[in-house]
Every structure is written in C-alpha cells, then in structure tokens.
Image (cartoon, rainbow, N blue to C red; front, side, top):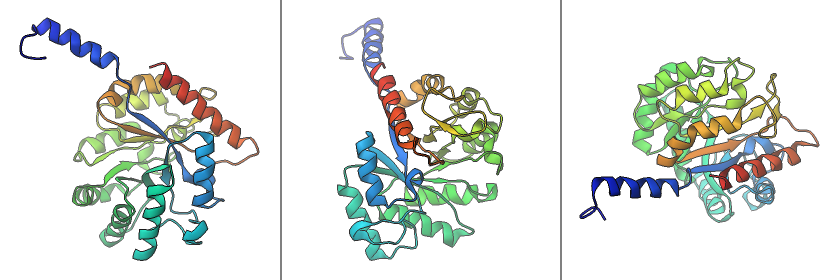
Length: 273
C-alpha cells in the first residue's frame, strides 16, 4: 500500500485504520477480592461475573485438587507445575501476581521465579524505593514486567508525581500499576494522577471507583472519574496493552452485584469505542 499512494492518501488510510481499532484494555479481577474463598472457587465465580482475566494474590488458598496451600512463592516445584496446568486450562487468563515483596535479592528472586514458573508475565509490587534498581535488573533478567502499586499515603508511591519520576528512571521492564481507589482518600485527583503517569509507562491499574473515604463503588458511582481516566488513557492503550484490575477490599452482601455492575459498565464503555 505504501508504494504508489501519496503521502496524503497514506495518512488518510492510516487514520482510518486507527479509528477502527479498539484500545487494548483488559478488565481482570484481583483475587484479593475473594480472599476468603479458594482460587478454584473464585475462578468459577469470576467467570460468571463476566471476567476474562485475573490477577492472583499470595494470600489465597488454591483449593480443589490443588489443595489448601496458598498461591505463593512458598509452593514446591511440583505444586507450581500443578498450579500452572490449572491456570492454563481454567478459562480465565492469569496475567499478573501480587501485591508482593521481599527484603533482599534472594527474596526477590524467589518471587520472580515463582511468577515465571506459573506462566505469568507481570507482577505487582510496592517496594522500598531503594530496591527499585534491583527490581529493574531482575525484571529484565526474568523477562517479567514489574508494575508499581500504591496504598493511601502508607508509602511514597501514593504520589503519582513520585511514581512517574521513578518509573521514568527505569528500563522498559518497570511501569506504573497504580491503585486509583487509594488515590481518592490520599487527596489525589485520579484524572491528574493519570496525566502524570501516562507521560512515562503504565502497565496496569487497579481500576477502583470509590467514595471520598476510599470505600469501593460500582464504576461511575464514586469519585474516581472512571470514564475520564479511560478516555485519557485510550491513546496509550491504542499502542500497548493495559491491564485494568477490578478490586473490592470490602465484603458486604452487595459486593457481588456491585462487581457485576463494574463489568457491565466497562463492557458498555468498550462497546462505544
């Protein structure tokens, strides 16, 4: 197509092709939401709710034929193999693991090796700032992308300015993985937070709508400006995939309908793109 077309016609065709593409967003469930259930039970529930992907947590029992051990780096080589086999065939794509951490290089290597052994390509961390050069090195070595998490002012990562600055100083293997729900009680405008992070690298987000105190809400019902954030991220996701993780850290009888409402809201937004 490039050979005989004029520059103007080529640009027009490129623009048309781009206009027909969808942003590369995947909505997954953070399994911490169902930490009181087993992984096997949670996978079946997540599929019923409409999810196609998940982020594993290290505090959840595996369940079923996998037994009562947790999905963590303490699993033996045999158990890791069994977990990978289960994940490969469970019908829900496992994309990431965490939030995890370690105190030294040996500990971090254990986490990276676990993530690699069970077939994942990403892990989410909230590290000591001084550990970032080590994580950058290990991420490149293990070919595991690291995305950085934040809680509400419990570490300096709560600031999107701080996160963006440190991500910018790392290699392509390290990116932001901010929790937008924790931004709200920290006093961060989520839209401004995204503006800072999109100037560097965003691999993933814990996409959480919340009220002013940080209590999770269905998408579009809280103070998180979910639509505005996704609209702002759309050009980024046209170029590279972004994992959006739905997480509810509070459990009530209304939690399941609220999570299902998040899935429906997201699907409707994607359908409109």
